[in-house]
Image 1 (cartoon, each protein chain N blue to C red):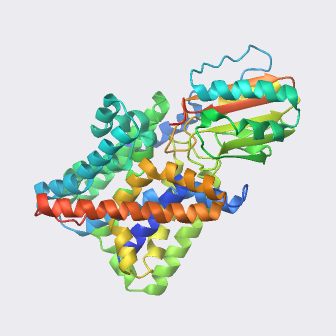
Image 2 (image 1 turned 180 degrees about the vertical axis):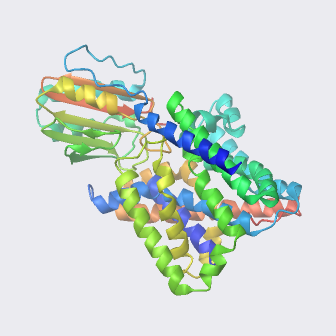
Image 3 (image 1 turned 90 degrees about the vertical axis):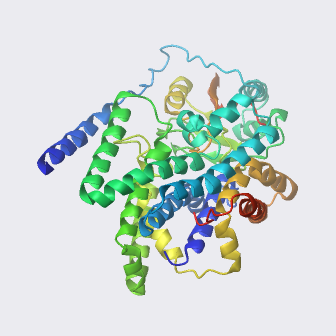
Amino acid sequence: MTNRKSVMAFSAILIIVFHLGVDIFAGNGLENFIRQTAFVGVDMFFFLSGLSLGQRPLTDIRAFLGNRLVNVYLKFFVFALIALFYKGWKIQRFVMTVTGVELFTKGGGAFLWFLPAIMILYLIYPIYDRGYEKNSKATITGTVVLWVAIAVVVTIFTDYKALFIFFNRLPVFFLAFYLGKNNVMDRLNDDRRLKLATGGILTIAGAILMYNFGFMNKLQTPVYNSFYILALPMALGLCILVSFVPENRLIRLIGSATLEIYAVQMVFGYRITNWIYMTTKQPLLTNILAIVIVIAIGCGFNRIFTMIIRRFFRGFSLKV
Amino acid sequence: MKRKITVLLITVMALSVFSACTKKDEPASAGDQQIEFEYKGEICSAVKDAFLTEINASQDIEEVASKLTELKEYNEVSMLTMPVEEGFLNGFDGEITGFNKGVMFSPAIGTIPFVGYVFETDDPDALLTALNSQANLNWNLCTTADEKLGTIVDNYVMFVMAPLSFE
C-alpha cells in the first residue's frame, strides 16, 4: 500500500483518541461519534497486516516467526514487565498476560490485547498461506465456513463474548490478505480517481453503518459484537483515503513506533491525560498535549528497542 | 463437494436465526422483588453513601450528580456531569426510557470504566429494573467495569458501574 506509514500513523492517532479522548463539546453528537468509533483504527491495523502478508511470499517460516517474536512479542513482554512494577500487578496477572490467557478471559479488557491477538494470527498465518497456495478457493471457503460456524455456535449456546473483539476482526484480516495476494491495491493505485472514489464511498457507507450499528447501539446479532464486522468498510475506506497522504520524516517516525505508542497510552496514558486535564481544565489542549506526549514517549521506546534489537537480535528485519 | 459446502453454509446461516433467541434477562415487572446488587469495591460503596446523603439534602439531580463527582475515592480522576435524555445511554445495550430528567456523571476520559446516572422518574422500580437488565459492564470495549449498583430514594434512581477502585 502506498504511503503505508501515513496510514499506520493515522490509525495510531485514532486509537489514542479512542482511549484517551476528552470531550471538547460535551454532548456533541459528531464529536461523540468520532471518539466512540475511533476503534476502527484497530481494524485498519488488522487490514494493513493482512495486506502486507498477502503481498509478500512466505519463503522462510522460521525467519518470519522469529521476526514477529522479536518485533512484537518481545516488546509486549517488556511492557507487561513495566506494568507489573508500575501498576503493582500480582505475579499471577503478569503470567496470565504474557501467556495470552488474559486475552481469552478478558478480551478487550486484557492488557494490550491486540498484541497477543496479532501474534496468534501470525502463528496461524503460515498454515493458512500453505493452504491458500495449494487451493485458494477451498481454503477461503473452509475458513469462512469455520468462522461462521464457530461464531454462531458460541453465540447460540454460550455466554462467552470475550474473544469476539479479536474473532470478528478476522474477516478484515483475511480479506486484506486476499486483496494483497491478488494485487488489488496496486491496481487501484494506477487509477487515482477510482481510488479516491472507492475510498470515499467505502468511508461514507462505513460511517453510516457505524452510526447505526456501532455507535450508541452496538449490533449484537447474528453473532456477539457483530458491529466489529460492520467496521470493515470504514476501515478499508480510511486506509485507501489516508494512503493519499505522502509520508514525511515525522510520519515515518510515528508510523514505525505504533506498537510502542499503543503500549505507552495503555500503561501511562490515563495518568498523563488526567494530569493535563486537571492542570489546564482545557479539553482541546488536553487532547493535543496527550497525543503529542504519548507519541513522543512511544517514539522514545521505539528508538531504545531498535538499538537493542540491532545489537542483540541481528538478522531480524524490522519490517513487520 | 461444492454443493455439500453450500448446503452446510446455508444450514449454519439458518441456525443464526436462533441467535435472536439468545438468553437475555427479561426485566422483572415493577415491584416484583427488590433487585439485590452485590458489590465489594470502594467506589460503588462511596457513590451510594454519597447519593443517599446528597439526595436528602437537595432534589436538584444536577447538583446531586455534581457532588457525586467529588469523592476522594476517585483518586483525583477528573469527572464531569452531563444532562441526558431518553434513548441510548453510555453503558447500556438498549434504549433507556421512563425518566423525566437524568444526569450522567463520568470521567473526563471516556474509556475509564466508570459511568453513573441520577434520574428523576415516576416509576423508580421499573426504571431500575430496566437499567439493571440493560447494563453492560463492557460498554467501553477495551476496559471493563467490575460491578454495578443501583439504588432508589423516593422518585430518584442512582445507577453506577465502576471498577473496584481507581488505581
